[in-house]
Length: 235
Image (cartoon, rainbow, N blue to C red; front, side, top):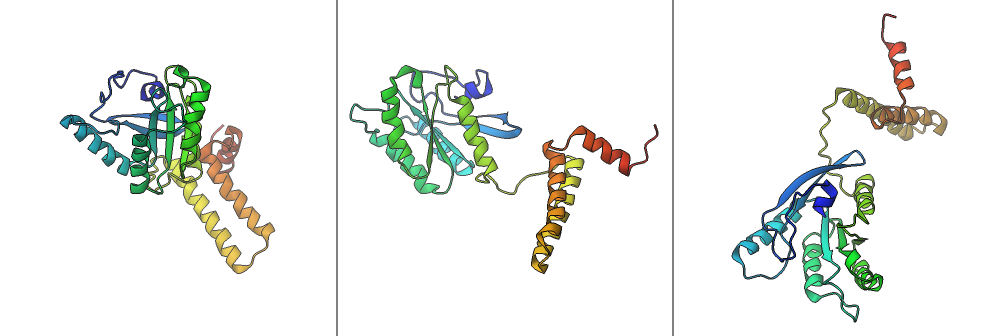
């Protein structure tokens, strides 16, 4: 899955369980938002000392992460009775117990190798677990990748991944944010003073204008008009 998202062979892929031991990290931009993906060792019972260290590091990375993407193998995770393996349920349970409020996306991979009815036997029980979002995916075929990206972006847009740790390095963006904050403070003061909605809307529109300077919703013509209106420029 990491290789598919990055569009390069970043991680070693093997049919042998326990291949990943050290974590592999890389970044990708989705919809203008930077994400750092960390591929870690799979969580399972093992007697291999090195793999156990890798699994311990997995839980450390989970604690640091803002969202957990739990990869499920569709070829080994569904029984004829429709029950998920107890080991898988236990693993997810450990993560939910340790981090009850952390967003968790269960990605069912290798869906191209199983029948649609098998996919449903995995999807339905997973979807029934509280607080889990389920995404079907075939990393080999590329299906479901865009849907996964949309789920990650949605977490950003609804504030689920907000930590107030954003650093603004662009001076123009910083200036726009300061101006937007000033307008928002005017709105807040106006609401406390009982100012009418018509007057408040002027400051709200101005705040949106400053945000638009950052998001790109303000066009080049708008920016040029602002430049010629407020700066002395020789023609």
